[in-house]
Amino acid sequence: MAEHMAEREVHPADDEPQVTRWERGADWPLTGLAVVFLAAYAWSVLATTLSVAGHRWLEVVMWTTWVLFTADYLARLVLARRRWRFVWRHPLDLVVTVLPMFRPLRMLRLVTVLVSLNRQVRGDFRGRIGIYVAGATVLVSFAASLAVYDVERRQPGASITSFGDAVWWTVTTISTVGYGDRYPVTWQGRLVAGMLMVGGIALLGTVTATIASWFVEKLGAVETAVEQVEKSELATQVELAEVMAELRRLHRRLDELQVPTKAAT
Image 1 (tube, one colour):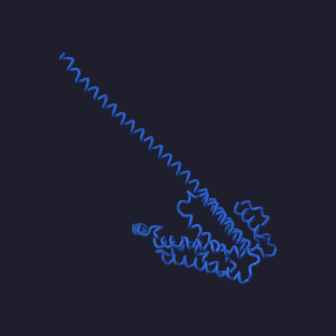
Image 2: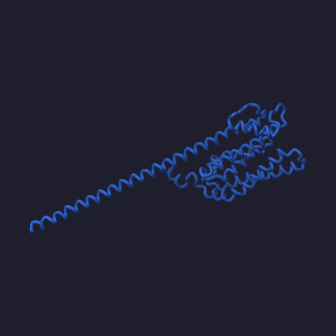
Image 3: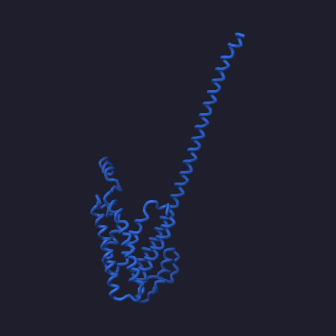
């Protein structure tokens, strides 16, 4: 047990300085790549008059960005001191790195984009909660709409046949309303739906927990301030009592000095 505790002290859970340095240096380049990939993917899905050559160029851009994201994951894995722990703590990165190799799951590369963009909002989350919630909701909704429209639009019996239908379906799904007038019929679309449901619940849960922790922290600060004021008042009362006691002692001493003087007179 002692050896295990010593090992934990030497290698704390977050003690990956090389990975941290890599992530700090790679955050903005990866954010740029994420934006490029999202733009290329949206263009390939929404453009109806794009030529075959144009689609091929967009595919090259998307595959190149995916390769660079994969290289980033492998670099962090190599730099990690405890690689199995790194894999265990980053399962989503591994999944979205491996699965998009299969053509039917290329929309999962959008998850890599979301993870990369999310790096930029680490830190003072509560201080930017309004911006984070609005940005995350718009980004997740846009990505989900693109993904479900990409896999549903040409399927027989599909009810999501336009991007407007996809946006409407995303709004009703992420808000847990679920009218049922639009729904995916392919297994890829249902996979997107499941991820959107889980992501929406997780986002709302995170926001709720963050707001609750903020209130708890503020109430704790108020209680601490009240305790400090009470302690200060108590200290003032003690000091005042000490001053009064000293005055009484001086007054008695003065009386003692005056009694012999009166007797002599």
